[in-house]
Length: 261
Image (cartoon, rainbow, N blue to C red):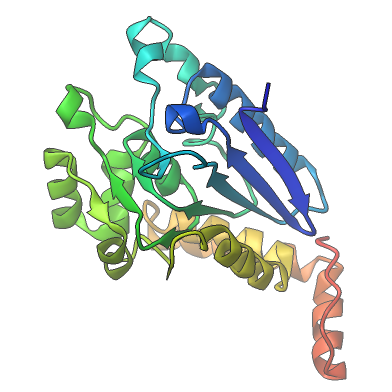
């Protein structure tokens, strides 16, 4: 039997794949546990600096990145298994981590699938993709962060329409509103995500991780707290081995050789 979530290391990048195409990559208990294990593997590997989440859409007439929660599991009383203690929904939605994650979407990301997207740091999507929180159509609410993450990503008015109607947002419009970082042709999402990841891994990893922490906090914290967090981030990079390498490489006009420490 194929793994329900696969993990592959490519240089400094972890490629994590939702691998349940026959069920539109819906999240059940096995997916949640496997996703959490994949994030653990990414976070614990010092050689990995960035993650990418993609989905297997082979054999699908209408590509679906992830249809969200497996409603069969919920209907059978196994809804609690779709969450993990540390990661929340899909083992990912509320997972604390230091490394950035890019999501590569080629198809529909709806309900919990959209919430996986919103929990990531950067989004690469194809022109045939769409994003939606369809829970209201099923007498549910987007309980994995979508109700507050989507307004932050695209603005309150646009998010309100999507949430109240349950209708999906086309990728082109999502790109215009700022949810999607890079828009590409069908079939090209993962390759573009790998190019983006290569640009990130060319930068100093400690600076990337510490900067990410402050950017994420900016949505909820006051300026004084954010200044303290920025000062702390500066302290981390200034005390690192990489600070000397970065300055020396600049002076010597060569590419730096980062160690991440």
